[in-house]
Amino acid sequence: MSNLVTRRDLLRKSLFSVAAVGAAGVLAACKKDEPKALVCTDTAGLTPQEIEARNALGYVDKAPDATKKCSGCALYNPPAAASCGGCKVVKGPIHPEGWCKSFAPKPA
Image 1 (cartoon, rainbow, N blue to C red):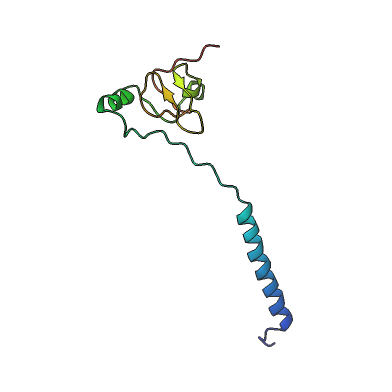
Image 2 (cartoon, rainbow, N blue to C red):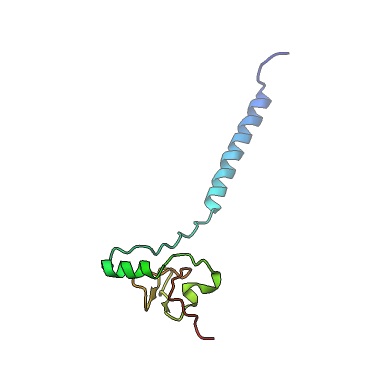
């Protein structure tokens, strides 16, 4: 048996390569941009006392109990857009999924 490549084999492999590259391009173009994760831990604008109070209240960006998230707290000030909110007690940026010891549920 010979190891010669036939014209038919060469054409078949070429067409497969072109189809694979084209499919990869189409899939890449269809991929939606994933939203960036919201991070609300930048305390650069806070005084050392405000950072200490924030830490003393145990603020975290992810609530350990899903029923006690900042977005469900009466002290939370929601943001105007997809960004960090604020709080009446904890200074600095506040994540809507966050939590601290001052959690007070919104009235029903």
